[in-house]
Amino acid sequence: MSEVPQLALIVEDDQLQREILSDLLTSENMDVIQCESAEAGELVLALVGLELSVMVTDVALAGAKNGLELAQSALERFPHLKVVIVSGQDGLVIPPGACWLRKPWQPLDMLRETAR
Image 1: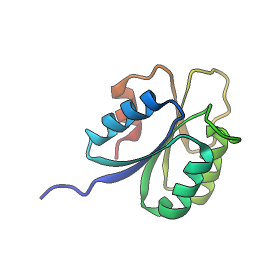
Image 2: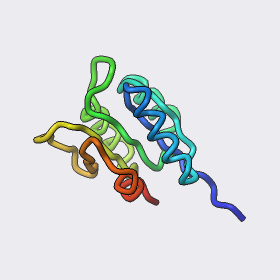
Image 3: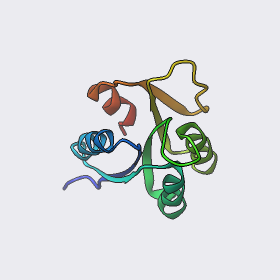
């Protein structure tokens, strides 16, 4: 019997990065929803937040909000959610409960952070 896929949300405004992340998580038996802005990510969270097991977000996103704001509001609403923030910036204040991976991240590091 196969495992039920987990649901992941990727919020990244760079299409190539979204596709790479999606392919990586799909290879680990995850279903993936992709968004390019925090506002779109918030809509997904409102619709399926309880079903999500992980959210990966960049800090710099299209739209008015950034990934840190999205991560903070996601964790306030869904404290069980595993949140991975990716950025090339140093000195970020990461919301409690989230983890940070520096760009360019390595696939094994991403898999370790998004693991069940």
